[in-house]
Length: 119
Image 1 (cartoon, rainbow, N blue to C red):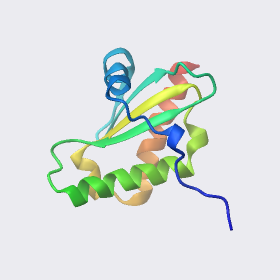
Image 2 (cartoon, helix red, strand yellow):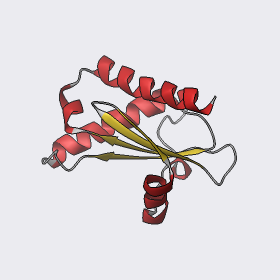
Image 3 (cartoon, one colour):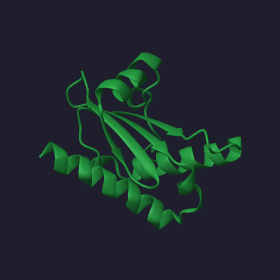
Image 4 (cartoon, rainbow, N blue to C red):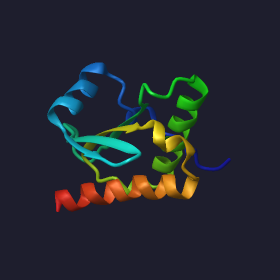
């Protein structure tokens, strides 16, 4: 059996207190399609992430589709997200009709901006 490629439980942010802390105290990057909040984590060498979709996306199937796409892009490109940070990625309604390559490129561009700000 091959290596499991999903997200590990310890990689996912779930606590409301942590999420609000990231939104209030963390830094924010926005684009036409995504908003990323990020903050240094309390655990050295660990990254945790949470995916959300704007309330403008009314249908649950569309919200779930966007979250699935974000998880997949993250899973395939974990190394582009700096370690020792918490990330809260929120997709905007405009990202719903993006082709997969453009979706991936937009998220990757935001992670590069994070790396540039940290450098």
